[in-house]
Image 1 (cartoon, rainbow, N blue to C red):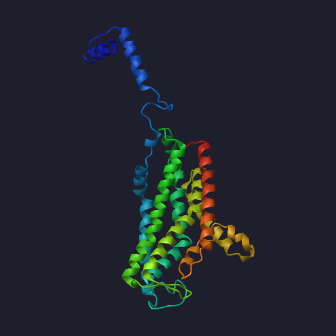
Image 2: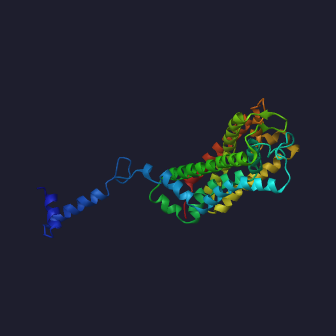
Image 3: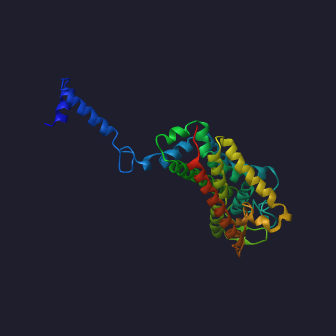
Length: 317
């Protein structure tokens, strides 16, 4: 039996052992507890096992603000139906704007839901999820403890951004899906009618709705990037969310000023409704391509600045 094993056996049975053996055993235990791995971390520590995505998603889904946002998205189509039922609408209309054609068929009802939510509600949802990522942890004074676990800063930002992105996509997809179901119940599976008079068969209109939803998700990426940047720059979640929403509103206001001419093309919201070009027999992809490229460019730059800002920020809360 080795000296360490003998000392361990004697300690287990309450038997005295010589001081030299005890000192050696204590030193060995200390070295074992403080042993470092090849990456310089404590033995057994794996950065990739900290702040797992599933844990963060479950945590976010249990938050009241997430439940309220998703609940309102589900409720909105029913509110629109009640509005049309209370008012006067003709389900057989084949002309007019998107609002006039909303009750013509289920696809038209989905188009209306995306149209009325696209200006304010959808950007606010994305801003809420991304603006609340880091700023909420800082406001709760839990960010410094999270980093002290330790969770690497880039992993904290990445995991929280991914969770926010998944929740945003869930909300953005949930709206047209629920609207389609509600529209089928109330208005039937008819053709999608455009204001120009083009009629798109129901089967093809489903693909159009799917593509429109994908475009909206991509186009709102710039809001996500801006909200993330504001979230790492302030300890006030409301400031981060409100700043991103105000930026979206300001961009929409400036986009209405025709005196700006071609400068409006560089506004992040200029192509917000380019998905409407899909509701036509001959689709013009120009505006959608420009809108997607603009949103991705804005989102990339803003996200890189956010990552740089968070990596060098002095965390005090």
